[in-house]
Amino acid sequence: PPPRSSHPGPGPAPQEKVLKEQELSNALRAKDFRRAAALAFELKQPYRLLQVVQDIIALDDLGVLKTVVKPFTPEQLATCLSYLRDWNTTARNSYPAQVLLHAIFCSFPQSRLEKVADIKALLAGLVPYTERHLRRVEEAVQRTYLLDYTLQALRAAAAGDGYGGGLV
Image (cartoon, rainbow, N blue to C red; front, top):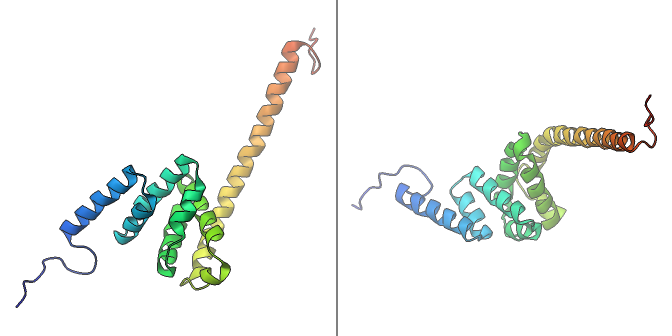
């Protein structure tokens, strides 16, 4: 009989997994983002995929992100959207999640997205946190207006023109 594997279940064997993780690290270092994303999926490592997205954002070339998501299968899209939904629950990861969501929506026609398993549930899970992050950003923008007004008033007061510049 053939030798039995000591590795139970699906997925790469431990030694193969270590090699793939090294390959993933090498792909990130070489900025081979398509390969890095594919390996992150294969290894079922959502936070390594998040790292890929963050590295692409740091390059300030979001066209690269579209080339990364373009070859995704419907199964990979479903997995990616579930990862994205989880990342979107924290403020720290909400921006990469939203950027990736934007890349997905720009890269795939609605007809292809409709083929993704549980797409409605996945997107419904994004809505509450996305709305919360949007409110947080809007409030931050409003605070910057107040800060701008205050700074303008202080400059005017220091220059002595308006805003009670001629204090007695």
